Length: 490
Image (cartoon, rainbow, N blue to C red; front, top):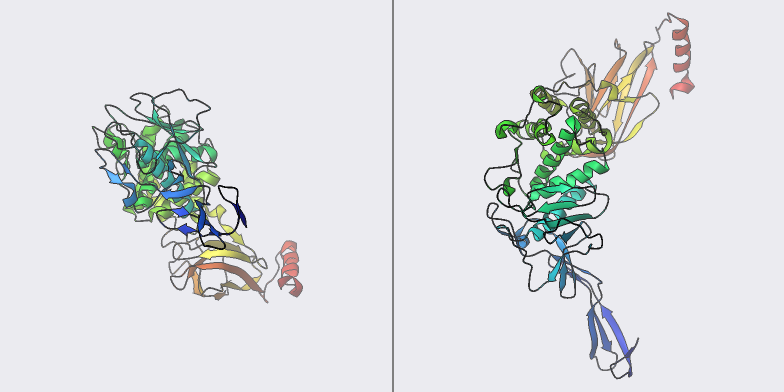
């Protein structure tokens, strides 16, 4: 290249650049070097923006003070030159400067001189802005890494220092907003509260649960539960809602015992239509707690069921019963045992629905492919057949390993069901053949022979006609002619 120096003299030069990326910084140093002398004529960073690990301190006198650089999960801020901006692809933090009036033109993120650090301490909290940025990033990362989705359909905008002595936080359809607290609360930018408000945004953009009655209680519970899964993602959850934000009591709400606050309920018999949605949230909160803590189902797998229900099945007016039924459908879709959910419904007074009609049907000559089978995912299918069928062969294949097949009169959706001697029809590896069938349908359950997950499993069923079948009606005769024709069968 030809380089013009400060004296407008042309010099033959080479431009060399390389990229550096580690836990501390991402940059692209670039040099312009004189082609004859090797002199460095110019050096600069050729990365328009630099991602830098968030450093500094957060927390309050109850949570304790911590350094963000010591956290297991890192959050990256944007650095341009010497300035650091509280913004990344996930979140942006805006300073409300103790005002309640939003300036529509004020959309710039908070910033500071990187080498100097940031200080917005208030009400014993080291930095509500850094806390909001960090926890907002963690919620977004968790949704992406664990569930391959986004918490919001756009960058989350978190507004801090809202109002004077404002003791609350809220989602308004556009922003998550956090007050600095006063007598009862510390600043609201603690981990599970940030997650709680972002989860309201998720619910609004998916199921749209109405914020009243039972659907409102479910809306609140999903946000509380999201706080717990975010804590679990960062290390360990505590089964308290807002423990770190409360000054004079342990928590806002208690997942393990909702009635501990003397106003929340954990059983549908105690729910009334005029009950505040925060107090009614105890029912679904306790379902989540009971499944994870008492029945030892993995917290990530349990939350996935709630998340998918909120994404696909729930609608604005979903109530406790239909919402619980929807979660059973999700659990079935994921190949999970329904027992933990049914037991949790029993202790909260919710009658579980029968999801047998939701079971996917296998049809002769129509293989089902792309099935995932693992230790956690044991999918169940239904196969119906007429009396004219003699032997039936069920075949499950995978390029990744062997598939174990169980055939039963019962649906096998709950622990032990369909596996008793009088209901289990047969089992085997990769292929099972049955004859002398009395029922009109059977259920098929797949599991891996080893602990390894099997992807792209294909399931199919074939049959042989009963040579001694006697048609008792014209319909029987017609069906026999159709199904037992060699061209049809294969």
